[in-house]
Image (tube, rainbow, N blue to C red; front, side, top):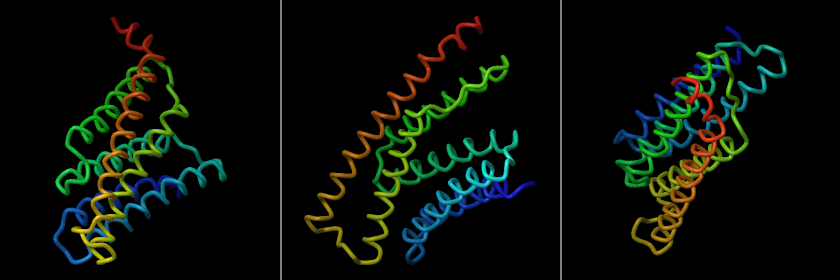
Length: 191
């Protein structure tokens, strides 16, 4: 197994550690979760760079890299629900969109087609990561006593975060519908 694929698998392990840490009652757990999420994000960047630079792009990497990315984002959104950072409906939309697009890609793959990621989908992922990082930073700041949850600043930050959730969900829906519409022939051939 090459280093790019090892980094991909390490991101899966980091995601599990992130979920456990974020949902624990340990001192500074939110700060540790933020650090784990950032490290996982760095491995996502590095595995792609290594694979392209050294020409070690494998079928395993093509399959697992985007799949682990989806697991990481889904885990983050779901884990932020009980912390009241992200509403349940928003997490459901983010997760459902990724499952549906993955299903569409698998359907295309069974017919010998490859449906590549598109720029709008990458844009959507950037907004999702930004949203997760925003709330993780707020949670870590509160935990480190940089801000107090009763202050006006804190209230405004959470309000801004809610606006960020709406933008992210809208982009998630739009990108999913646009991708499905563009590749609707894949479903039509299955009748």
